[in-house]
Amino acid sequence: MERQRLDRWLWHARMVKARTQAAALVEAGHVRVNGIREKSPGHSLKMSDVLTIRLERGIRILKVTGFAERRGGSTAARTLYDDMSDVSGGADS
Image (cartoon, rainbow, N blue to C red):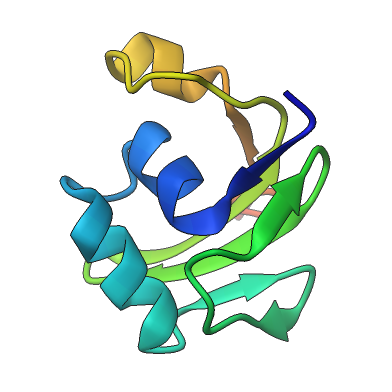
């Protein structure tokens, strides 16, 4: 699989509990793909796309590293992305 719908990927990666929530998140403008706001849940993601997702619990920056045919557990979901959210630095003082 080379590409996957944005809403489906968000659901498989366990960013939301239901696919309808994923579609609503995208339609509300809370997801950027490679820095560009995406409002279409059917947008086609490819490997190494970078998503910026605004969730209730904060902002996540994820690099797409894989796709899944079916939604699996949390361990399987973690293999679909690299979390880049806290790459920009921490408190070193």
